[in-house]
Length: 544
Image (cartoon, rainbow, N blue to C red):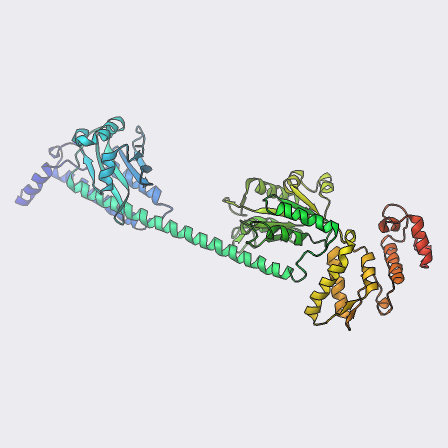
């Protein structure tokens, strides 16, 4: 044997085998070198794996590495703990023999000596519990209760800061920890620390990008809704009128606006339910955010669910991109569900569940998204009838009908018609560049006598049509059913009354008496209506 070989043998005799717990003389130099080579090859393999580890696989690969190192060195357990709130080391990764339980995490106050050494960046290593210093009396007690009999604990550092610790130990036998082995294990622990730091940074970056994308989607959606709101505001946005019916509605708006209670707006089409919804939102604490709208009758049945709850890319054929639903976009604001009575029954049940749980799931995703949304719904249907006919869920109705507001028809607030007409004339006068100095008085009286089945929307369209035809400073506006040939005649009150009677008879098919007859619609006794028809020269040939 050469001198150098003898020198190596003498050094090895002072060490324990990396694999076995006994003294070196029990093994040959050849077997020792084979063991050492296997260990070095394992370290090289693990270095390669952790160089490209991802956040999705680091947990699995860390535990696998703990297992392979422990098995190679004939250890019983390996424990990785991470520091939380500077108070406790929490167990995050662990491997142990089947007959052992994981070593629990520990509070700094429970193992003060050990914790202080780790936080100072020192490695704690002992071949026997008795090797621990006297001040580690609490650590000795824990070691006797949970093991280990021999242990090496390394601080886990990232950027010079201790974030945890990684330990290797034996429970069934004692062993020594040669300096060469400690050096190699330190290298492994540094590699784990770097991988944890990198993957943690990747996770933080991914979450930040997802949050940026979420905010970008929300801003884009809000921009769309704001544009829609500007378009919908092309007409008069205010609530004009001084009738008793309208004042009652505005009182109800003031009462409910400051709450988070759901509101159900009921009334005929064209009565201004959307304006009332906007007023409720603008007067509420959520008024700084744009109100999000969804017309349930305007969205195809196949798309209504994705509009409400959102969708992931590829959720169905044609879903080429991810889309946030109205509930997500309306987070912190108000969601106005117009024509709620048009929702399909299966979507009604999903809407009810979302309102109850305050969570939605995008189509194609199982991830729940929480929301804080105030619901204002509107319908021109009689929902109690819809419930009886099994077309609307009663439980959804009760969820929405917390504070009902009934919108009066225009025929129930005829004193507001002159104010509305003047507002519309002013609007179109500016828009069309046609100055109007006055409105024909007889025409105004005729407008007040008309029943306005389309309510304020129909009135506005009527004014717009008259403004298009206007060719002077005095405006004549006729009810929608007036014949075009009558537009050139003088519109006296008697003429307006005669025209209105003819319109009502046309609506009823000439029927005067009975439910839905002309007398009932006009609020007159049939005999009174007969006298009026005779006075205006309207014969009974309209009767069927």
